[in-house]
Image (cartoon, rainbow over all chains, first blue to last red; front, side):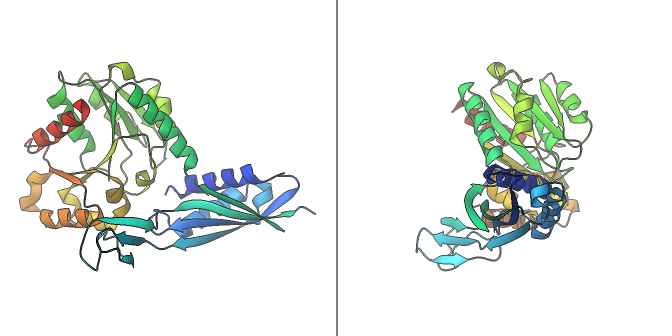
Length: 117
Length: 216
């Protein structure tokens, strides 16, 4: 249950990028979450809501989670595969020499803000 | 309505502090390892055996992470090795900042191996770099051979796997070859040791490897 700490980090980053907390409210926060990032989306949503509720400019902010697939590329035959199970082997040639192209991301990509009326 | 592009790693603050820790370890020629596992797999017992084995050869210091109590730090101190306890008060993992604070109480000049024993948990500690050279994941045979498949992140992010309580195999429905196969599918470069803290099996091999890393 480290999602609470992750949610706190997300909100800290958002606040650092908000020009003026009194003049703007955050409408949405876009976060990229890799399949192998070790995050449970429902748990992150819950944690985000708890912390956002105590952050006046973020009370109504929507957490938009973009789930990123786990994709590997074989360094032998160059085949790229979207893998469901965490088996880091090329299904084409069975090589274990693979590079992870995506699926470990955990980052805040963008926020939508509007002026406080 | 306007959009602000951010593109920042959520855990970048932790990663930055971990890098500071790593720089301090390097500057002081300290070899740091981060031991992770589920509760009760034998992290502290392996550490006790490791200390008994390497004491007099290498200077070891320990940072213990637990949700509650300083029981583990007391067990380590009893062996004559300096141990600093971090109590997370409910926190399910160690973060780089907690380790950095604890480092104030570690004599890095007189340390060759720093063992950081993480909170017993196979999920959350996988995501947090503490500045270690290696994550060492411990699995005991009593936990079953499918642990790697259930907790792939931890096995992917570790470089060493210790399979502990190997002496109990005759009494358990755990296929250790399957366990190793499962782990290697997730991380083919894992270095694997089989140990028992009761019989002492495998402790030699693990400690020899550790010694070699420190003297590199």
